[in-house]
Length: 414
Length: 223
Image (cartoon, rainbow over all chains, first blue to last red; front, side, top):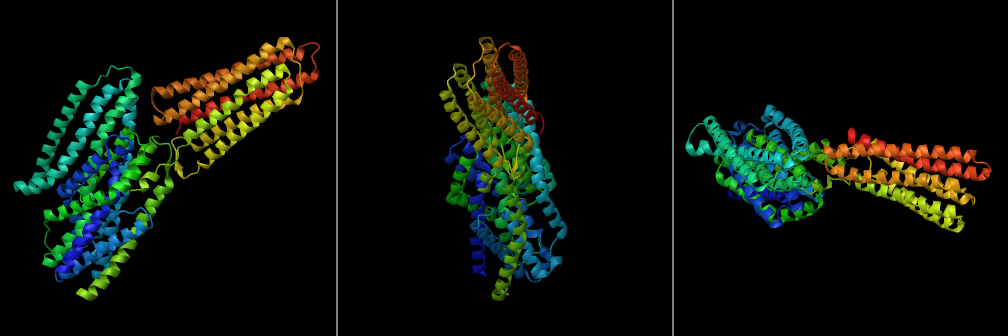
C-alpha cells in the first residue's frame, strides 16, 4: 500500500500547489497594485498567512471533506475502498483543475474536490452513501456565501462613504473606523485559531474551548483596537483643511489593506487547504482501517497542505500576482478594504462552520457589492457569468473523472 | 485568480470627458467663425468649416466608442439610458456648431453695426455655456471615483443649475436680438434669414447643453 500513500501525498501537494499558484493574487493583488507594499513583501506575508490559516484553522473544513460528504461508516467493512475512493477523488479533481487551467477557465478547487468525492461515493456505495442533507447545506453555502459577501461589502463601503469619506471630519471618523476594522479582523482571526487550539492544548471540552477562545479574541481585538486608536490619535491631525482629508484617509486604508490581505490569505488557507488534505486524511484512515472513528487530523497533514500552498505561490503565484496587480488599479484602498474584509470574514465564518466555500466566488460577490454601491466604473458581468458557468460544469466533470479513476484503481488494488 | 483582473471593464467615464472636450472644441470654433463672418472673409470661413467638420467627425468617433462599451455586459454605476442621453445631446451640440459653420459660408452678409455687439454677446454666452458644461463633465468623472456621494456631488448639482441659467440668458439675448433685426429698417431680408438661421443654431447649442446637464443630474441622483 505504500505506493498508494506516496501517490496521495504527491497529488495532494499538487492540489495545494494549484491553490497557492492561482489564488494568492486574490488577496494581495490590490495592495501590490496600489503600491501599498512591495511585491516581495506581499509574497512573504502571503506565505506566512496562508500557511498559518491552513495549519491553525484548516481542521474544520478538512474534516468536512473527509467525513461529511460520504458516510465513512459505510466503508468500515472495507476501508481500503474508502482510501482508493479518496485517492480517485483527489486525482480526478486535480486532473480537472489542470484541464480547466489549460483551457484558461476560472475554476474552484473547492467545487472540484467536492464533485469528485460525491462521484466516487455514488459509484462505490450508491447514492445513499452521500450525506445529502449536509451536501444541501454545503451547496446552499455556495449560493449564500457570495451573496453575504456582496451584502457585507456593500454595507461596509456605504458606511465608509457616508460616515467617513464624505463626513464633515473624515480624518476624525477614520480614527474610529480603522481601529474598529482592525479589531474585528483580530477578533475573527484569533477566534479561528484558538477555538481549535484550546481544546487540544488545555484538554478541555470543545464548547468550553470555544467560549475561552471567544473571550481571548475579544480581549485581543480590544487591545489591538485601542493601540491603533492611540497611535492614530497621536499621529494624525483631524483639523487639516478638508481638501487633504480624502488622500489621508485613503492612505490609512492602504495600510489597513495590507493587513486585510493577510486576513484574507489566512481565511483562504483555512478554507482551501482542506481541498488538498481532506482526502489525504481519508486515505490515511482507510489504510489504517479506522474510517468509522472520529478523525483526529494530524498536524503534519495540515502542514503538508500549507507547505504545498506556499510552494505554489513561490513558484507560480508570483506571476499571477504580477499580472493582476498592474491591472486592478481601479480598486482604491477603501474599496479594496470593503471587498476583502467582507470576503475574508465570510470565508472564515464558513471555515469555522466547516463549510467549504470558494474564496474567489465570495470575492467576486464582494466586488459586485461595492459595484452596487456605485463604486466601480464598469464591472464585466460576462466574466461573472463565466465563473458561475465553470462552477456548474466543474461538479459533474470532476465527479466523472473521479469515477473513471476509481474504476481503474479498483481493478489494480481491490 | 487571473480572471479577477478581467472583472473590471473599461470605465465609460473617461470617454465621456473626452467626448465633452471634443464637442467643446467644436463650439470654440464658433468664435473665429463669427470673427471671419463679421470681417466678410469667405475664404477663412471655408477653411474653418472644414476644420469644424473634421472636429465633429472625431467627436462622432468617440461617441461610437462610448456606445459600443455600453452593452448590458457591464454593470455600471449610473443608468445606461442616462449615458446614452448624455452622448446624444452632446452630439447634437456638435451638430449645431457644425450647422453654424455651414450657414456662415452660405452668403457674404453685412451685419449692421448696431447688431454686432449683441450678436457677439450671444456667441460669447454660448461658448461660456459649453465651457461650463465641459467643467461639469470633468467633475463628473472625478465624482465617479467618489461613488457619486458627498459634498462634491452637491456642488456638481448646483453647477448644473448654472448651465441651465446660462441657457436661459442666451435665450433672452437671442430673443431681443431677433426683435431688433426683424424691425431694423433697411436691412437686407437675406441677411435677416441668415442671421435667423445662425441664431437658431447658437441657441440650439445652449439648449442641448442644458439637456446634457440634466442627464448628468439624473446620473448623480438615481441609480
